Image (cartoon, rainbow, N blue to C red):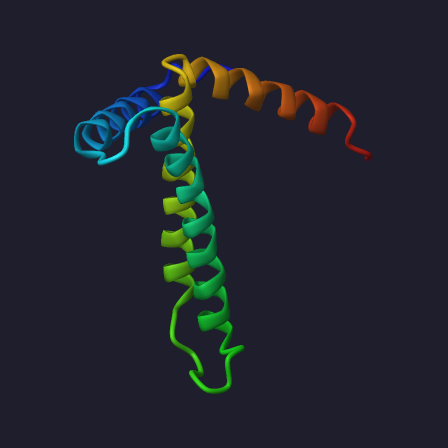
Length: 114
């Protein structure tokens, strides 16, 4: 599976740009800064949960406060945050992700039952 499509190139270019922007504006450097960037994922996943609860009206005090489009946007934020965290860990994020995705694809699709 190749990630050399124009869309993949644009995705990784944008991730590189966002990572650079965050690096030049982060108040905490080093290992602590890296850990905080990874922990940002927890915040984003919490926002997905909040949006799902809001879209389904599960909080009777608040009712329906979100749409399924809000859930989609929050899921996109999780993906972007994860890719930025991966890029922060390694300059080879594109290759690391591509290789891992291929292993998951093979593991999942070759063991699938008919």
